[in-house]
Length: 279
Figure 1 (cartoon, helix red, strand yellow):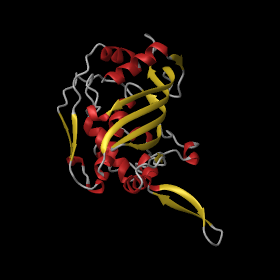
Figure 2 (cartoon, one colour):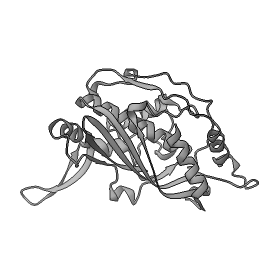
Figure 3 (spheres, helix red, strand yellow):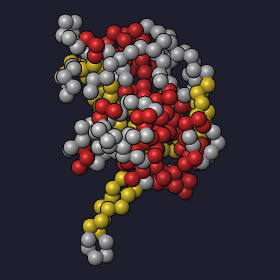
């Protein structure tokens, strides 16, 4: 997908070297943005193979609203490094998507907390008032962010309808270009298609702003060469993007959709490129 390759070039060409909390340096660019038309195909990268199964399991886990990975880790280990020994995760995106804590005062003046299902709010709004500009979902809870081992990276997204097309804009505070961004792109494209299908709309554009867009890098002889993502990304830049696949989702209510109800058709990527995660 050309938009992704352009993002890679932008960070490599115009980014600056900076240290990171992981101990691995990055090439960092402030305020990157790209936009793709979802009507032209499902944006699963073709310049390297993306592990679709893990991506889909992760998204369905988000939508479950769970705040632990005990079920998820049976399918994929991608969140194991940030969970405790019991599988509890301080920053579980789905917990905030489906059960965001809202403090309020009752009639007696006592403070209480109710949980807000932000995804259901978006669905209800799309049905009742699709022209609304208030379809915002946030995973950023300030109290959690001050203590979490990994506060949400892709922390807020907004849906917007133009004509009969559902668009999504994602804002991300920190984006690992080699590993995270391809997953984020395909994840939110899938979610947009799910909500469009649920509410009788067509897919529109996915727009993505990344505050700190970065590529992990390591100098030869540093002992950290395994974390250097630059060679793999330069390899991708030599590859010609192939036609995008198509995502087919079973015609079921969103709440009833399961893993086997999603099928990617026509996916023909270049070979996989391995990148090591900096934790």
